Amino acid sequence: MTVSRNTAKKLLYDFMFESDSAQTWVEDVWGLSPLLGQESANAAEVLGALIDTCSERQLNAVVASLYAAHADRISDLDSAAEWRVQIDADISKSTK
Image (cartoon, rainbow, N blue to C red; front, side, top):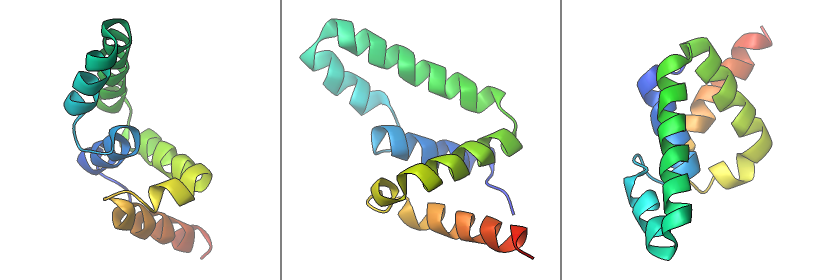
């Protein structure tokens, strides 16, 4: 079982921006500092480009790696259940 590109995008955006869009985060940062706002807009654009460019296998590896490293933080996200089910399925599959 793998995470689709759309699901990976949702999970990664929730992890980075605590929403399914970077726009609010960029606007909030921009309001604090235009310089940092531009850098945050660049970071959001790069993340989107990487998600569009990476294969689903690569995206799955990123999702699994982030979950392994940040399970406590991820458990507080709106998308926590989707991370958990996917990683449990992958672990179960790899131990068979």
